[in-house]
Image 1 (cartoon, one colour):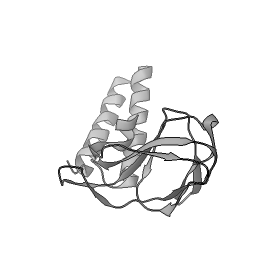
Image 2 (cartoon, one colour):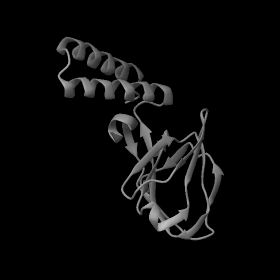
Image 3 (cartoon, helix red, strand yellow):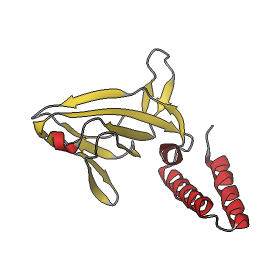
Image 4 (tube, rainbow, N blue to C red):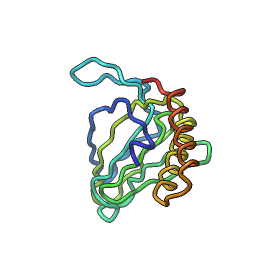
Amino acid sequence: MFISAALPNRVYPPMFNRYEPGMHFGHHVDGAVRLMPGSGVKLRTDISAMLFLNGPENYDGGELLVEDSYGAHMVKLPAGDLVIYPASSVHRVTAVTRGERLASFFWVQSLVRDDAQRSLLFDLDRAVQHLNATGADAEARLHLTGCYHNLLRQWSEA
């Protein structure tokens, strides 16, 4: 699912954070470019990713709040779940009021820079996978798979 949604070209090494009661991170947009540690290679941050390392039962507050054109979305997932969102989104982490929130975060430079194009490719890929799993019409699957790869070929910056 991650590969299909992010179409990763490069992935920034994961970082970790721990929020205790009273800690939060205010509204911000992630920086557009990061230097890969130890190499000086630049990575364009198309996608932000957060992996929750402990479950919501371990802390109160500490929600990731991501804002987009459809409003604000609160995210607080079970341990082991990952959320990705456009790095261009305004987001914050609300204050932890009890316990400890542990997470890992990183950025992805996608093969496809544009959020809308990535979203369209993700939807198309999910549909093709579903059709493959259900054994739908082989010719239709072939055409849709061709459309997916031709769009990826057109939009990819690889």
